[in-house]
Image (cartoon, rainbow, N blue to C red):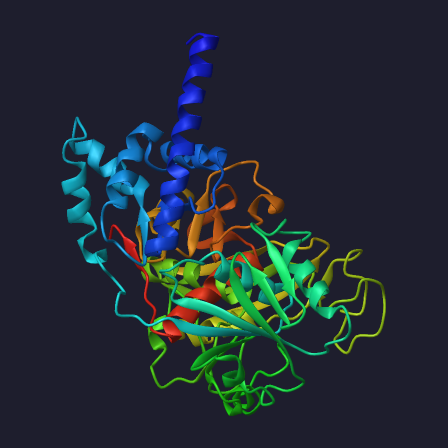
Length: 477
């Protein structure tokens, strides 16, 4: 191919990606439809990211998917009343072109494949959400909720609750939402309404409330009712503490974004969200590490059975460590986080059993905090009940990531060059690094990357939806 033809081909792809963007935006805002290509989200994607997502299809299925081949499927989708679904245009297009030579049957094909999503969720009422605490997870949850802004949105961020209220606090909070050293600038505009003590982000009006205790807020004063309170503080972890939220008028349920104590259900979305019952008022979304490893462990146990194992977490430092050496009540955590690797404890391995009881008593775990600000890795070493090898295990996990009910939790990479910073912004609970997999007989070691901030926050949103009865379908099945 000549240089001119390469340039012309690139120009055609670029223009096709640009034509997709307004359709993708309208589908999400007006119908709650998130379009993906083999799991890669196209929501708010740049033209280059859309092109890259199509190039990755060959790595997954051995076939090219050209933008001109997928564009008619997005056009057909925009004509259907599909609502509140995640639609994988890549899978639909690849399957169609395997059996058809022209585009004449695309609309009929799409209507048939997506029939389950027609007017899905029309009867679901919009529900109020309050973020109690506005730290790393709170602000990322805010970003995820705000990106849903549109007439089809059922998960409505209404307020954030903070301690303090000093002069200039509101602008400081807004600035932290606007800019993030790890996740980059906020995608949109953030304004401050000083008079009404509110932040307006992409048209979402967020009341800022100051309180020193969960039971000191009357949410009804702000027009908030039957709200899900998402506690991001980590201060209260048992029923007595978290139950204080339920004493505030306008609050109806509580979700903790940390492992809970006692009988509170620890839920890993994609694994045991069906354990959540309508009568459950307090639920935990477990930890970022538990969310990263549980789906992978479930997949491995389903096929091979796990006799026992150990999970070592290589975890980015967190806000509960010190920047420089100073007093800390926990062992070793008082030493400077940016300067040291710090051995510490993790309850993630034991917590797996709360979401996956079949593994109770079978796993041990430990953690090493390392001098990176985000993205962690779990090294899962397990003894299996059945024999396997590296290629077989990787092929199985690749199928799980692409085609199973865990496809929204598990990603899979075959890159030989990927490093932690490449995973910033990953929406998956965990990403299997297949090039590092070790398997021989009944012993296997898996390396699982995870964005311990953003990927975990995506999992939390799934639990929020389940608690409020707001279901999202993944199509095609």
